[in-house]
Image (cartoon, rainbow, N blue to C red):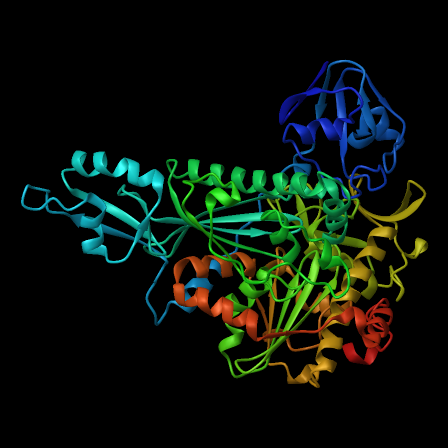
Length: 595
């Protein structure tokens, strides 16, 4: 049996497995948008030592082949090997927006924190012949009606006597879950199709103690929810495999963030994610979300336990799941609407979550209407040859001077560009379109710039030799922006509202705060409104999960928001398809909309 060593760990190779499969089996997950079929080119690794057998070199240049680059999904070891895995294929370290703090302050400016978990210091009377009441009944006499797990009740007699009948008791939703004087921490977790984010929250003061993120390892089995539903439904072990991926990811984040805080205890979890991600996390078959009438198994989840979720925590710790609205509008959007506050306002607002799926909500305190459109994962770095998340080395801003044929870039971390994140993609397409380097169909005009070259038989605009945007990338970006705009315009038409009636636009998503609104409007991605109407609220799904940790009232609001939303299925709308086709041009076939 051969050994595979990597810069992220090592594993043993089982005969017949690809390098990708061997890494997955040892918990090292790479991006593999096509599910390991060798057609996406994402699982590119470099073989430093050893012999391998590989036949498919899709998207790998001759220069890269000479340096030892191969596709992990199409390569099989023939000896012990040492491989190098690019850091951006494994994890992502995002800049965390101050939007979390702003949102928390907005919601708690006039109200007190009221988390579902509380710590109470008890000073109990010691038992005597005259007072031989049972230990737990003695606690209930002070706390009222509470329950306790079998595990904790077995430890209770020694705890009380060792502490001389003075102890701190942590109660979560009417159940005693701990007898230590630990800081009350909760964990808010956003399970996205592409990335997973975790925030550690001090429940006593509302402070965000720390955040961390990683790629969703399910990427190895498909880019979007549909491919993962198919994998979960058609593979006998598919659901189990996908669930293990996401649970392992969440546990890795919990472990990492708790270690940073002296191995702190977490007393409450709040989860947000789209409907499919939540089904998979809880081990519920998502198959019927894909078939008409697109019905999920559950929208409002019971308050289950950490042991049910297999989380790294004491087994009785509660896990709250934000409710879904429909098969393609989940708890991430409910959390986003909660965080935005649009459900409390009289003014008409538009909420847009720009991610793998583009979810849209229109409404105010009286009504809310929502829809979902498949934008694809390009704005999150997947499906673009030099795409990456908004992390160190990502090109996030781009400007171009047509007269001098020169450009300027801004890179996260002020280093050489290693790739292009979502805001950078929009900037590039917008600037090149405005300068006549690409036409209204999004086609690169070969003679318009010295930076346009050919790579692997495809036209591309080069920023550096290792960072460029290809024609197929531009086509992908235009399809994504068309889906988002078509969703917005169709939903507005369905409710009889014009763009000018919108008073506020909330933009959520991983790259929202870095988005140049003018350039997004210029390519026809967002409605042509005044810039001051747009507000960026970062990862609103995670913010919503944080809010439900801090307030039982806001948790009830989340349930109410889900019930109030009316879902419109765009797949049945002829107008949506017409709008989508029209939006496949820059900025739109009806260019007057963007003048």
